[in-house]
Image (cartoon, rainbow, N blue to C red; front, side, top):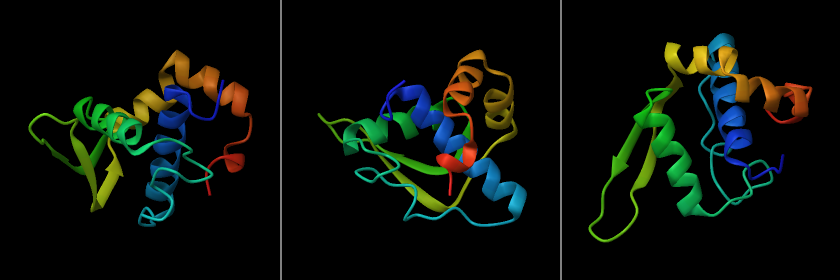
Length: 111
């Protein structure tokens, strides 16, 4: 799987948010942004991924801004975190397990 594969991105985001939750730390806006080493994707794709995670209730603390004639923009708030449904998806979904097997060590992808 490529670094920019949808499921790899989802795994990285959810794993990071879960790690922050368990460690009692606030997620870093510097980590959660596109066009970086960890998320080497364009802004429209980044917004799409965050929008889907929000709509599926896997994350909370985002605001989806709809603009006429354009794709929505997703803003991260300081209350962004993984939800119980997101934790379940991360831990139980077969695709997430495949990504985890490819990645092997979460510390390789999540600070």
